[in-house]
Image (cartoon, rainbow, N blue to C red; front, top):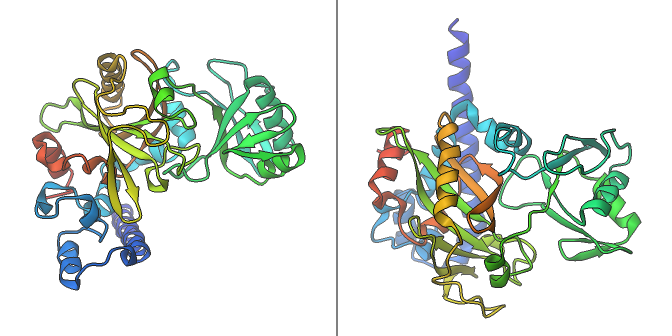
Length: 366
């Protein structure tokens, strides 16, 4: 009977060591970008921050920010065993089975060159029989849908996501044209991927930047005192010519705060070669970002909090949503231990007493 708790404790310790390794690896990768005195770097390490924090935060107030160490090492433990439903996109899709209106359809699983179709809740995306040739099955799906998204079942950060479009005589994948045979080869080489619905975004988002799905990351928490869900922070990510057809901030996209009460956007931050640049208008489209209103934000906030409340046994979720119209949205995926860097560039999370109380209750900070 004592073996199970011992095994669990050892597993937790091993997982912490793995996360520490990844934190150190990231620091090694990026530290050379930042020229700073050793004393400053050591001071950042003392407070649990990587070198990049000097360019992102007001480091004269280190205790106001959730540190890199706390985020990497401790936030992955908040949701416990329920983390699997956020780390696996197919499991998260089924977790939202009571909210078909708000989740993206998943058409198939790609595995070892085969397509395994799934029931589609909104549209009939294709045959219900397994496709021996994944490329052929996906092309048939594209013929019907026009656009689809192919993404890994696990992993985050927009890595290895393929936005696919049928152009008639060829196929476009993340802006690159593929012939039929090239597309088949690309798809047949994918293993443990999902074929999902492409969600059309609302007009305001298209006007800001039309070439990428511009998602909102909404970080929700369950207050340990009131047991009610609240939004800790919401950030609208916006694509750019640098990030291509994705809105990845690490690759040149923008992060603008969504006011939690009004839904109004702030100026947008862009990460450029080791520093932050701020824009009130999108430099590639000249469309204003600052003061733009997310249409129907109050309804979106209310509905998302209602879903978070239903899933209150998972107290910490980073929702990625696409606004599709006034008060309407679709959930793209959920994140178990959300990145907070490009949330906290707008204001330090720990200045909100509810947020501080949440992290304290879950042993993330003291």
